[in-house]
View 1: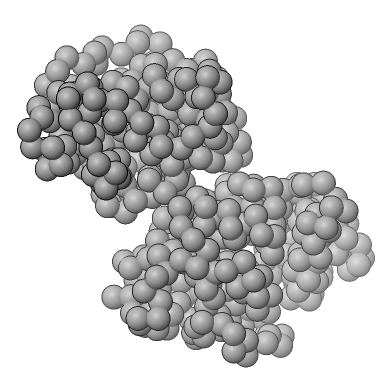
View 2: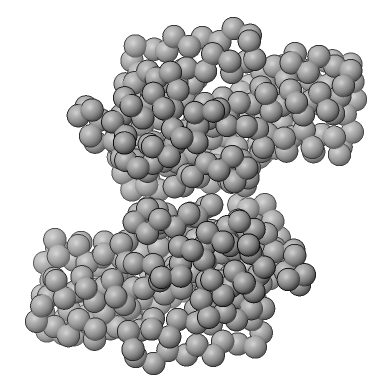
Length: 233
Length: 233
């Protein structure tokens, strides 16, 4: 696809785009707290994810790693659901985000895309979290862009442009791949190309807007479809 | 090998330990400057590698990326050899360090070690350089620790301990793997474990001290031997 010949690097959001957090976390919650509605609990936890990172980026909180933020929101959700989670269980649940499963198309799709492009994770997880997730799922990243490299969370400029700098390329040579339009809108604002991936089951059957903005450069059903659209072998 | 059960991460020096810079660079020099003794030129260039990084670490020079330093030393060596290298040729020669070949044991050795350990490059190359080198050679790094992540060069503490921090582990859970004793001595000084790899041909037949310090935790002939000694499958 000639229009994207200048793209050299694909930057992937991970939670939701490459991996199925709903399945992984509901399973972990079911095991850890059998009395609660695991699906509702998982959705409530995930709903608190972006806002607390937003408070860090707004300067209302100092930099703290994702596990630390997830521990705080986990206890908040537990209170909301009327349960108490001990420290060992909290650690286990927070670490469960490291071994959430890839979507079925992730491994074959990434392998095809890697033939043509340098593929990087660009996620709000830490480098260690993303490394463990990749080893667990056999994702073959060329490079892992974790939030602790920059001490910033998406949608901060430092993450998108920081990856472009490390890859020694222009922002326009990087295509952000995500199932969240807000991530893509931020990336486009900093000069990256954008690819929307449909993940209708991201929220485990709860509604998810997969329409995607017409401003995206590519709209794909999944990562295999993305490989087709980007002419990866 | 029970003594190393606490090691979780292997950190690899790349130039010389995993890849054969002498072969790669003499080939590039032969093509670019057919009139010079390519072996002698290559050795002279490589000899200037550590000292100029040392000047950056000593504060005599501000932070500059490896390609920039290599460009400066390339022109110095050209002057020494009585030739002039134009900018396009200099760029080509500096970039030749990105596609130097792996030693024959590198790919199979790394693959075995990766089964048991998280494997990282820990090199004075940039992330982009190391990413290109890995793609060229099909090295399957879990993570690439390039000097531009820290704006420091080995043997600075920031590199060894910086990688341990990103991997969320103690320095003692990281084993540095290198064919240069000075690299291992520094790593050990910061609390890492150490493995020496013999590379008798690193300097293309010129003498190379492969005796290794008795303080090293492991001494291996190559990366396959290292896999044996670390009980990797």
